[in-house]
Image (spheres, rainbow, N blue to C red):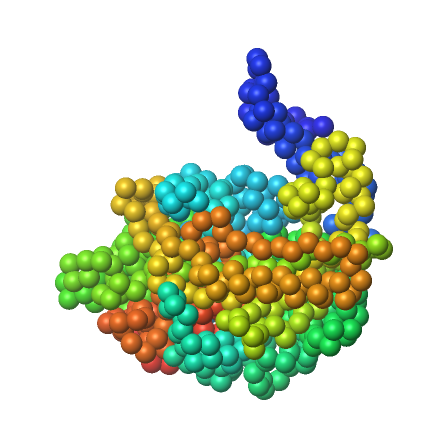
Length: 631
């Protein structure tokens, strides 16, 4: 039963039923009933969380409560207080932008950090199962851009293009808030391994691909990996990863003890002879950086942490930047263009929002994400660079990649799921490389605790649960405690045709050309996904699964564009094949730097956020070293 407060959700479907009902209207109404039944009680249905109790889902361990963090006013700058000139303007307050702003401000530079979204407190982000990043149901969410005013053009399976709102899952993933995707990520903190930086040398270049080596190696980035792990706080155990490069020390916090599912997978791995390691996480297992230890709730990936146990740049490096007194944070603001003078030199940015500002800057640092950073450069064309800033060789926007995910479900005869979070506790890296006939591979780990709604939709799609009726409820009750999921991110082979351009016929709310995505994943990615799914099946069967179901999460058309977008402004040694040098500096512009995953030449077979953080430390550190203190 929907409360009056939320009954508006059912209004469109009920209106459609006025007169003769049709199949679409009935399906829409039935879907709303399911969302009310399995969603969180805060949305007006599922009174007393009755359906959660029925299937055995617990939002947090019994006897625990989320602490109420002490919240203060967000330290944002009023538009009227924005200066005319800064030493550096950083565009985007996510993983890379947050680190870059901190490094520059602590080095004595005066910084303006510009963010499209707002500075959200934990209380602004309730654990809402209908509006989380865990599951796309077509509703506006707090951290994503609103559905109106942020169109993108993407391919359809038939080959045509369609314009999408941001609430459509095909639009892609771009969290827009202070902290960016780190507010709602799963926080897996893997390092890339040495082979990830030398993919072309290791495997050759597949036909039709743009596979290439990075202009730097693992050893070049190891100091910044270490810095990111200790300054932000990573929990884990560095032993057991056969692919790992050398490191100067372990993690600052121990791993989580194994939950029931991890313990079961450990037995299966031993039977197969697989090496395993604890999953490194940017989540506190002990008090760290002034924040408490995680209580192991079941609402991690896709949700902000109510207790601030999960590390994000908004609760670590950005407050440090502000504390210097040299960093202003401007929210609700979009950088429309990077400004250049008559000679093509970068001079600052034009910002739109509450008002329009032109801000001068000695340096501009872009960290808006792989799609939006490329879009901004392309929308910053000038007389000297008519095809886009930094795009003399038609490289901006190319090589777009993300992660195809592959794995398997395993159903056991006995309970293996106890709702103890975060979820990923054990992984094998044995399949990241050296797989016969495969380019790259993937890390495999147990998945996050499923929400009842995410489980329902996936299980119905696999034919394991009827969509409605008493049989559906019985199947959900039987399925939830006996399900174990093993998944991993496939290292994609980039293609020059997988790209971001801009479409002058489709404009955003400020009249700026929207991003247009084109191309597709490389055929090698499908072969690798099949291989990885088979290895997940092997692991689950060895762990005692009575039945298994292979999974491949692929885009229905077009390129990968999920939460791990990368590659559109790749670094390199040659301006003809890359956008920046090995320090993230855009070719031909010594005061324009990129500090996000756009720089990635390849994206690894693991979650890439630690590499984003490490690269931001590297490129911003170099910039600070060269520039010295404030002008």
